[in-house]
Image (tube, rainbow, N blue to C red):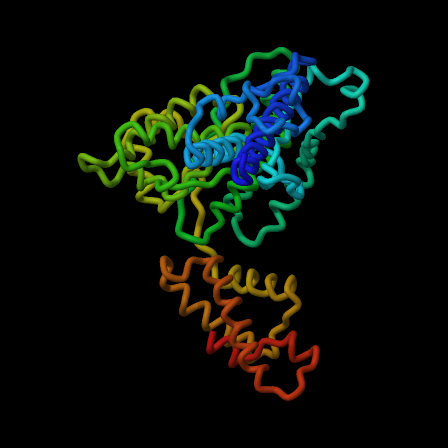
Length: 404
């Protein structure tokens, strides 16, 4: 045998031995001790590396009596096949020890039934997340009444809390109670607090024991409606599954029914939603929100919608004084102050003028945006200072408000 054939034979032996060892190891790990596999290598030659000048007769490569080129091709195919079978299964950094590089070895899966009982008992168990306890309803009420404005909403929420509390007490005393339908419609202009109150209500319902989780899932038409027949129901169900145990908040819900057209699937989303609102009413509350007139049309567009939603909350626009209060509250929480009375008067005039465009300004949302722009203008102004004091960093001037 010449040198080239000797190298080929050695490569072949390495491949066979590695395959034999790893397959045997995997089998023993999974199913217990198993007979050793020779994989074409006669027992008398295994592990010796001594071919006595001849190719091992039990080796399938040599029994083919192919040319050297053919043997090289078969060796390469064997190596490629082994690497493909074991790829990504072991990431240890091993050094090669033979004519072929070390093939990445598998991280062998072990069935729990094959682990000794003593070891099973000592294996750490995955810690389960401990749910946070419900908040106290008294604390939630105090938070509600700490919000700026929203007087009518506060009164309605208080009334709803009272109603649910009394119905639960009747149930505890064995008295008959009507089925609670707590799905709600929020209507009003942008920035009037609809999303904030939806989040708050999810916490209230959990505190009262109505919901198991009390989380809020926010979505809109794009999160519910797909572009092809049959996909919208699936998409809507996925969102509902995420919301179970909490509140599903659908913003601009009127967009589900006001488009129409042959290829519009908004109604399919509504139909799916209606079914789950009934089937899962014990642990799912749906709140839909949008502009007042458009939400009236939405609810009246389907008898099912009208019967499911029997609680309506109208969110009024914030007054100028309330929006000034929101701005000042943001300043206080963020460590800012208005420089003087002139800056305060400039802020009032700015809010009065901007809020005339209800849709464009967006109530509390508009105040937040005005506050953030004022901070940007302050930063531009202070960037020109050679030294900046703590008072400079805290102060918003008339110019900051005007340029915001």
